[in-house]
Image (cartoon, one colour):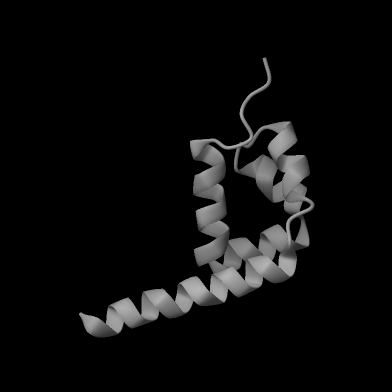
Length: 74
């Protein structure tokens, strides 16, 4: 039986590349290697090689703005 593509480890990794600029930079330089380093399954690592890079950067900026607005309200 194949492991599911969506897993807690994958979700944690995606969250990290959305919010951590250093991790995102490493990921964009070597997606497969960074996914392997995060302990993801082979199929997940291969799928992440094909991630929409423009969409990733747009989402990361959006999440960053939301976090900043939330900080400002405190």
